[in-house]
Length: 297
Ligand code: NAP
Image (cartoon, rainbow, N blue to C red; front, side, top):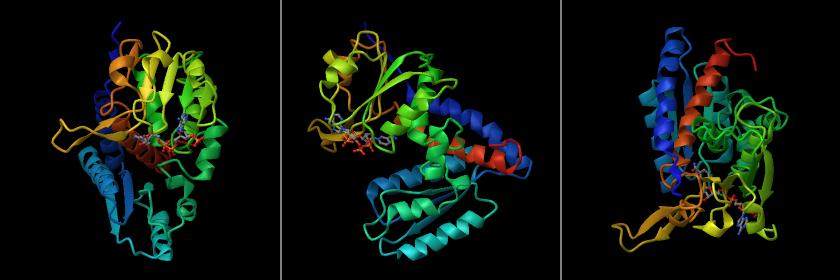
């Protein structure tokens, strides 16, 4: 059996196309969705991500403001900027690109963002709302995983989902979203981490296996139940002398081997990755719908 390759790029484009008409409608009504992106320092990966977010806003018709601050920016200055953005009517979402320089306390910064504008879904208020099953903004990569499953007809309802990894950014929220008594969720969820014994015995029981540990090709074919759906969140750069740059990206799953066992699998790149920005745009549009009084959450 060769698995269906889940095309995250195509699915994210479908979501973006849906958002274009919604942004147009809201704009005509006087509630153009607006996103503020704040970048501190010159981390090259962060610069690429911020550029992509700006570009996405432009393509979808959102209003956007981008603040590029030097890595010497005092914490207080960043907090003051967040206070200003919290008060700005035209800004529905605020995203502070992580990681921040070492002299800035990340938690303090994330706590300062108004939970009503926290389109990244990392504020404890939004994490709490997700946990109790009354979400406002779900974190983008984890909700992208759910969206991929649902839109490809692999509804997790009643399935055994095994999540590898328990970070606050991916593992825990993926598990939390999929275990909720809700549409597109309702799964039996097991979480594995670095202290889990006999991981392969657990992963082999998964109907849906989500890998988010940051270890290249960790999941091998013998760890996967025949016919399972495999979602690879990992993004790892490995050496590859055959490429121009000398490196290439791989996931946490040994794609070439696992695709012969799974019934469906996401590639890296082109699987979960493109979903993150699409879900960020979706959250920002949702925030504008709330501002317009169309949604009560
Ligand atoms: P992280 O914060 O480093 O967390 C890794 C998790 O994996 C931890 O819970 C860790 O366990 C667990 N782990 C590490 N080694 C393990 C092992 N050998 N066996 C079992 N569990 C193990 O990473 P993250 O931020 O969640 O990111 C995970 C991966 O997803 C990375 O490759 C990252 O680049 C990628 N990612 C992709 C996107 C995207 O596509 N848009 C977004 C975010 C992240 P402990 O808790 O016990 O340490």
